Length: 226
Image (cartoon, rainbow, N blue to C red; front, side):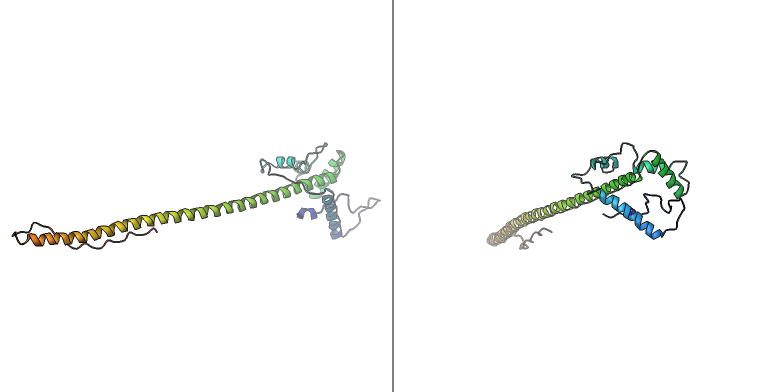
């Protein structure tokens, strides 16, 4: 992954000075290109980015991430973060950028630290962050695929269960309908039987004690499952 900051102006050697200590005018674009090449060369010299076989225990802990990536502070203790702290020192943080840069270079030189080591440390950490970002993205993509497949199986199971229960409901309704039809048929037979009895009794009484029901309405069918 190409990083924009690789193309920022980072000079590893003082620029614009002759052997006699006189300044010379240089093409700024040529200087920028030269600096960008220097940083690109440093990045290329570091080999392949670190690999992560599994996510770190705490992705929010960058120190743990650097540890997993086997990025350790050098013996002299100067890292890109050390330089960042130096730049925020109360004695130089409000100074112009050029003065701050010179102050840091002087401090590094006094400590016997090559600026290239600092740039290498920065590139290593940046590549570790980028690589781990890719690891996390792949992990989320894999999880999404896994859960999508699981959701499809759940949906299919839900549809199967719903279909089974609808069939059971329909079977229950059909059973009720059959019994209602039987009851309706019996009601019709009962009415005919009562009418025959009542017609016979009527010959011998003034008030007929036999009750006859009105014709029964046909049964309504139970509603099916919605």
